[in-house]
Amino acid sequence: MSKHMQLTVTVRPFYEGDMEGAYPKLVRYLRQADLSLSNKNPSLYELAGQLDSLLYHFDGTSLRDILLRHGDKIRNTHKMIEENIGDRQLAQVDKLLYTLEDIFDEIESDLE
Image 1: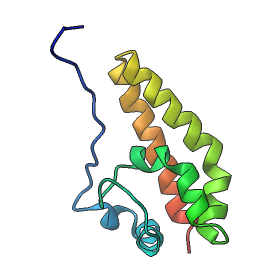
Image 2: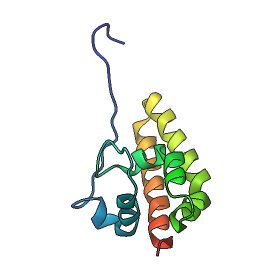
Image 3: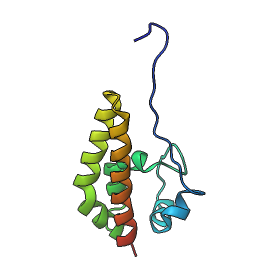
């Protein structure tokens, strides 16, 4: 590693339009909570990293129940993404991001 520079890999949101267009039911819930998301149009990776906070904030809601059902898959996928970013295995990261999208697509379809 360079003495005065650092390589950074960032996962940014990339929605057609915004998150609400892709996940309207999920965004409806997220608006109800006062979450300290660094971005009002967060990436699914960012949401996955805040799963425990989401579970806390949405206690007693159907969103919490749905997140709990998918919780292990979200945590494991997020962890594998972090590990592969650290190992600079970006092709694998890309595949895992698709997996994370699939999980959130299931969550969106499970929401009322």
